[in-house]
Image 1 (cartoon, rainbow, N blue to C red):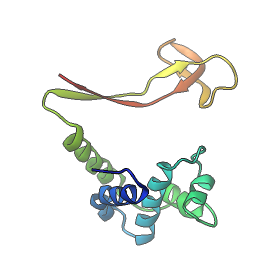
Image 2 (cartoon, rainbow, N blue to C red):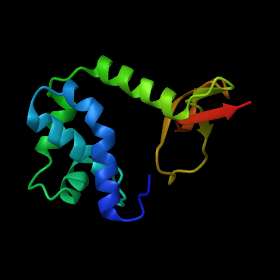
Image 3 (cartoon, rainbow, N blue to C red):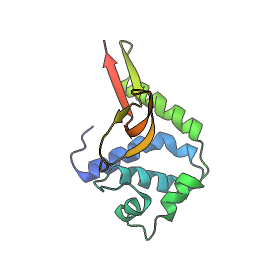
Length: 139
């Protein structure tokens, strides 16, 4: 897939989203979920509803907030569909995928994303930077 310009990205995202459309019963929800995904992939530095809404040209963030809070959609089915796609695209009989939700100890008060929480690495609570990664290892 060639996604070197903006129109290629829009088409690629629309193509990616097609198998998921059936899990969102209302057209407004489908449109807002797709817009939310597009905004998350944008260059905006702060990924909150207000800034994402601005990227999409919305007057306020309520449509995006409704998607996250109130909209009815089949989250279990979406998760299964996404898993099938990841396995199909990234899977291998000679490889594995690992989701790592490690925390890292961070000292100081100005690191973004740091909060006081439990960390298994130090077996106690502390100022932790939480991070999730998907690692694919081929053998």
